[in-house]
Image 1 (cartoon, helix red, strand yellow):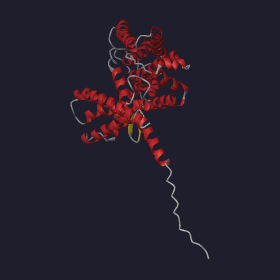
Image 2 (image 1 turned 180 degrees about the vertical axis):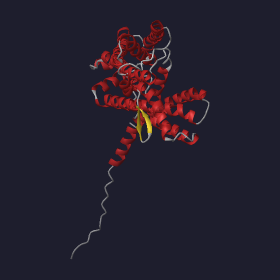
Image 3 (image 1 turned 180 degrees about the horizontal axis):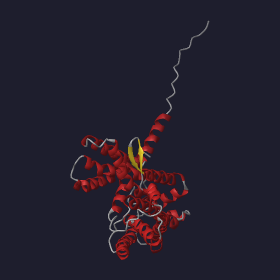
Length: 354
């Protein structure tokens, strides 16, 4: 006679927690991205002007927005890297004009070929960047003081040399010199894409963003930049070449100034010696809106590009909406404050989810 035993239900295994962990990991990664706040801001600004300005969504208008963004973004990228490294450069705006002036005056006074002036301008501009970095590392003065001094010296030099050589505050036209058409094609041409004119500066801008992102995320130099900006002495203690990194960052800003200066020259073929004053603050604002911290050690090149895009959308969106452009600086200041607060909130949320 067989016995029957009661059926005992076995406990079902709990579903694996891997999906939940993966979701939490993706959330932490998203919240930790420096450009998260700027992406939200860019979407909001785009939607706002798309609704308030009838012509904002036209292809020609968007091309104009991208061009305005690129002229800021070319400089915002190296300025962002410098800020990630914990430093500032208040001479960046004037250095753009200095680059254009050197190129123009060397071409006009010393040779009949503009490419000689372009190369001379590159060497001089990089030398100014190296000077800023070298003086910063040797004197240990704050970058604010060092670059403010350079700003004042360049401002005076730009005006003084221009008036001394040409007896006016602007350079002579170089449009009829050898190499001008080719140089304009490189630095200031307009490409036609789908019937819409696209400025070559947009390609320069995107190329710099890609290069800077690769350096920050895929190279030892990128690790050095974050380490120097986070804690300089700790970075030096573990073998990071702090001096070389800081000088290199200032030379990166100088390279961006050279590209922007050549565009300025070959877009208009003359340069006013007083241009560029105040633009350094716009570059810094674009980097901060893009997620860079004032204290260093945090930020991204992509974020600086989005910050420049927000600047371009705002500056041109106000025009397309037919508002008084005097309000532009108000909107720029408001965006700076909102972006700074949003970036701080994003960082706290990212730290809380770790």
